[in-house]
Length: 467
Image (cartoon, rainbow, N blue to C red; front, top):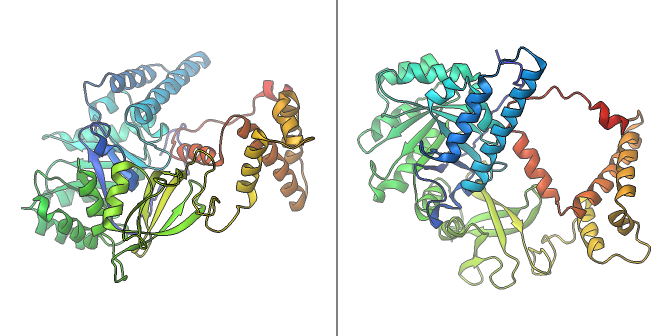
């Protein structure tokens, strides 16, 4: 059973329709310019270095947290303070030092079993609360499995968030071990080499465990000329929702071509239909991608596509200045179409379309339209604008936020609640726009919070209610 600080209803089941490759960084993802944007394939594994001072600070803080008993109110507050400090350190480590956007990329972090045990599981919870999707525990040496399972037990995490990483290709003993631990871990990671390829592919094809498989492939053990073919074979053997493929320290070219090797297309020109979306899944436009454009996008971390009229790469923004920051590339359920999740940029206006609108379907509606209007009002409001008055009068804006939130909390019909919600959204968006916060910023925060495992009681704050 889960401890009190974990949500008993937390269930993570990330449905991967097509088995795709992702990078596992033995080196830092910031170790070379070529590696900076590789996590845009949607997943990445990191191996913190034992001598990294920032990482050791996090470990020390979590051990310090675990050593505080929860027998008094004061100790509980002290423990909570250490927890928050640890999560902030971990968040900074992931976002600032490793340049990872945990709100949209599924980050796996490899943790020492010894550190997990010494921190009584606080270290694993800390990194999940900071936005990691999975905790990876390695099985090393004769006592490796026993030690790894001890670390998993003290951490008391949902099994779907745990990856057990075997350092050797699987044998018959491995199959029995997987059966024994399948109720405790969500994913088993195994190594693939040229020598183990045939045997492992057979195991994958007949895999019936409820535990998923992650197959790790390294250039040290597989000839580079065979990499794409091998990745494609593993992907087909995996089928739907059996697992994933981890490539060790790949280049953008290796990862991009391996990614494309897992896709299919029925087009004569070999291109992939591509939908370009915002962080909140609004479609900006429809374009096409090639293998080369996928590689180019991963190399520069921008929206790069294939132009059929120019018969070559289209680096969005090179001419117009309306470039895109690439966050994530996804493949659809049939494996023949792509979705690029981006932030649309621009010095004058943020436009994807050549008609200088955000989308190729005309002006936005709903909350995105409201955001655009408020941004215009902040710069150039007409005379008598109520929105401008709110921007300039902080007390009025605060009072209206409190007033509308209180009205929303009161009983009413469906229509009444919808109306009050619209009022709250308007005033909240005024506050956000004034602070330079966008809808996509809020979506990013919601996505990051969804990965947390620590839950607060959520009681109301009396001093806020009185104020």
